[in-house]
Image (tube, rainbow, N blue to C red):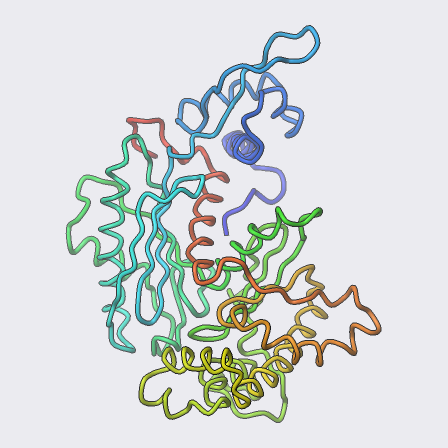
Length: 423
């Protein structure tokens, strides 16, 4: 995840980039506002801020938005506002059956949306790369048609662990035997097709979809809290079991890109053997295969696939079928054990559930409460109430767009002045 420099910047160019970011972030989050207000909030000297805002205006990121009374005898203050349409971010969420695509500006306003089915075979990352490249070409054409807009790049949201290099993915869901340089394959497909000749190569960043969903849910949750949470743990289940960790508004991936991933957290040391080499992993109890089989839908899953079995499980829950309810009670208890482990280790302020864990939260509550009640009786404040996410199936795509927006706000100097080519 892009972020501010750690420690003092090493040179004047780095200092300027950091200060540009500080100024632009304040205007984006609190604007319209005056230069004096930005100076007071950021600690930037007024003279420096004048030059910084002139730079941001020249890049088309900020505009002057009229005058407001200064109060007292001072002259009216000229307001500064973000120009959200100056930069666009492209996002693609990859699932086993479809690609969700969006192009949006810095305010989150979409200029292009599409859902594209793909039938790429298991174990063939090149076929998936071709499908993603086709989606990117269509979306890029929509972005290039917006007058005056600069396309920052594309964020690819992928299930499964993603290496810290933002390029390599590990995906058992797609039948890949090892790490795959998905961004490299997509770039090769874009070059092979020759689309976009004369245009800069489209920057691509690969990020785990659950991490992006966690980021989006954190941003959606923060305005509803009197004090923004410092940390959020996100646990989701859909095509698999995953999660993410957000600290101080930033995705935290750890040293190998798997921080906050609960799917292979052991919740039963004498449990069944998992494909990861461990035993009793959370995914073996709350994953789609485990849940649908426990509800008596193993035959439907085998014949029609897990998506159809999950749909049938949802209908069974709504109808109050005892076997379905019992499956969710048991899953809720196991999920509660995972919540206890996560909150004990990370001391997370919030725990948010996503995917069908959010959709079926009311049927998981009884099992969750049974597992959490003992700890709560002793230290209620240390166990946050798991709450369903509010973004549903759009969380990962929204997080990808948020990730791109953050990258622009972190480095405004990468946005060229209109009519110029970025360095």
